[in-house]
Length: 366
Image 1 (cartoon, one colour):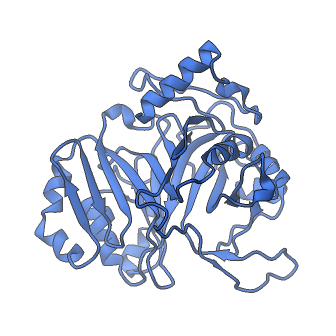
Image 2: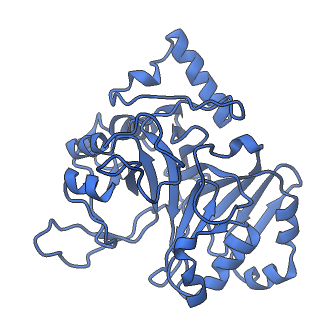
């Protein structure tokens, strides 16, 4: 079932009382629809307002591959906050697609391969198809893991030079997020409508859904024996799916390393695995829900660290690493996937500087 169709089924069933309305969440966060004249079928939205970025390491010393793939081929916008690193030929780059983005730091030294599927929407595929055959771009990407699967319809599958999988789909202009875009010039891509995370077959998908409901106040759009889909914005989903290669496929979303203690602070392992970042309407409530389940995490890899709820409010963020079933916490993590959970607003109620929205959506609190 498609993402939009699933959302409509959820709304209809909730209205008829066949399932609990998203407003009945134990989290008690307000759920809104964000429907508009250009986007009339927006799905229910809870406390997670947007999946802001995917952070994934590139191979150290290979800015040429980043530029050829993300900027020349996909036509992501160069984020001006990291543009100076292009001239340096090293360090982190940010590649923007509509209101979402990729954070692309250097590996230590290897690149990461995201165990999942990254979906990007485009108004058409004509330009992308031409660039896939461009000799200048291909001269950089050939000899890597870069591959293109194109049957000539409204969908393409592309493997990045490091091995991560992308699905490119055609969507209308209504796919754009009306609330704002990332900084910098326009991208050819409209949005990141879905991020699919692969997990082992037989995983506790209902438990994953309960985690997002109980901790982050996000409605479940679909949940079955092989996948679950979570609303993370008006037109955006975070999907967990059994790996298509079955139980023998190696899956890892974390890379934990002991880099020593920070004096006077609790000890945490550093995580060099991928992470996802999202903006929530009520950071303090999310922190308390995570803390109740002992899920708050500090990654010493990053300078911004939140050891308490007040530090989280000051930093406009905190992190979780473990996804657990709130009904069976003692069973341990269903999977480890680092979440950077950000607040739309700062302590004084103003919009956080990195949030892509033009203004503060209704219902956002400190």
